[in-house]
Length: 308
Length: 250
Ligand SMILES: Cc1cc2nc3c(=O)[nH]c(=O)nc-3n(C[C@H](O)[C@H](O)[C@H](O)COP(=O)(O)OP(=O)(O)OC[C@H]3O[C@@H](n4cnc5c(N)ncnc54)[C@H](O)[C@@H]3O)c2cc1C
Image (tube, rainbow over all chains, first blue to last red; front, side, top):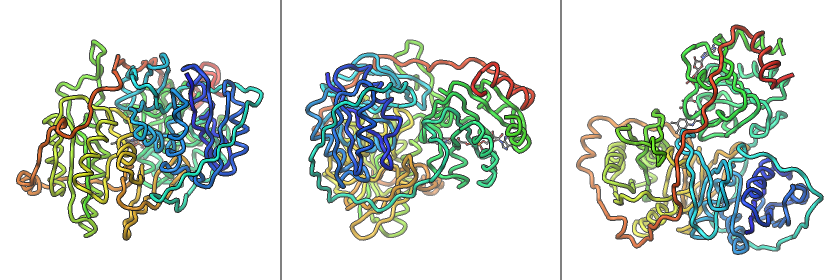
């Protein structure tokens, strides 16, 4: 067996998801290569080479891959595909965008968002917003898989393995990058933070999200949100936690003014410890909370900040 | 321009899915079904293009058993001009669906196909991307804004880092995210009118696509239950519990 893991990176840095996807690859078994596609990705490649279990890092440093357009990256992965029995990527927006395109080009059924590896052909994945867990067996000769990174441990480190430059020319007349609006934040990333504090519609407006800042500072937390808070324009879309937002599983998740809809729970109910602050004692969020505080968030958030 | 909108019949988003006692699958008997929410957004976007005069025909298509004609009628009531039902009783994988849709794209030659980014039952998030690959078209996934200009579609995409904008050459495939629009409700007169709009039925196996399964569903289980928690009386008690019992803060 041989596994190709697509590296997840941004702004010249390898993202921590990659080591978790490698962890899934180790569970599958066989030789593991990592593909780094982008521009100025030398640091990314060096970091990938130090993930324990990786044999070879293949680097396609080319402007065609600068913005990770699916049309380009999929073309590259398809070129490399014949050497591999498994191709894995994180179920990030990049992985979700690219891998199904690869799958169809290779005429293979894809398995999305696995949360565990049973054996090299068999995987578990959540369906119905995580209200059921399916065990599926792929009969394809080549498995194309996205991995829910939050469900896997990270890999340790190793002395750097071999790094191999690839010279690939991919031309794309179908799509073009126009621009990106990135949310700048000094805080840890949602998917990597040990603590996440999220606000919902109960926060009432964007300014009130500042009430979460002091607590997040003290706990080294990332700040998330419910869909209602994003839709209402309180905060940007990349803060949404849930079935269709980011899936997080931190040590501590604090839900503030969030009712606990199925779709929100799908994104956070695998957190180790859940705290809910809500003024409605019947809010469904309390059914998954380890510690519930029935209170007005505007009263207790300043108290909480002071108590930490 | 012609717009094709594939839609799926799924469990209503307010209903919590239950697993069958024999763990063979999710139990959908007597469960309320509806159009997948992301597909509703796709239908809405297509209708708005028609209202703006950019599109002149909106075709809704659904693949599945007879029951999905109910969702096709809904799409017609919302403003689609015509519906196509590709009938099959087989449980299909996303690749099969994409292949059937690719056949339809070949026949109908729509300049734009708008699909939901994922269905809330299988949560696969694959079909649009696969259709783009099979038809050799560009893809704009997870769209929160679509602007058509000449032979280009400018699509703003919701990505993990923020919002990415790409320019796609038409014909193109777009998949919808939640914030693309707010779907309307069908009015009673439009529901009545929809009954007279054309709904063509074709058998899935007439399209020459191999629908043999490639992935087996071995088992479906309930997710691990969380242990019951407690209600704390004060912030002080909460902080103490988090420090001494849960040990997640210091
Ligand atoms: C296809 C689809 C996908 C979706 N995906 C997602 C997703 O990924 N993520 C997501 O979050 N949602 C998602 N949703 C939306 C979801 O169904 C809910 O609508 C949403 O999660 C509700 O957000 P909320 O809890 O902030 O708002 P509400 O449900 O309005 O809850 C607000 C809560 O705040 C409490 N509150 C109000 N004021 C105070 C106060 N002063 N002090 C304390 N508590 C207060 C209220 O008691 C209430 O419980 C999706 C929906 C659909 C249909």
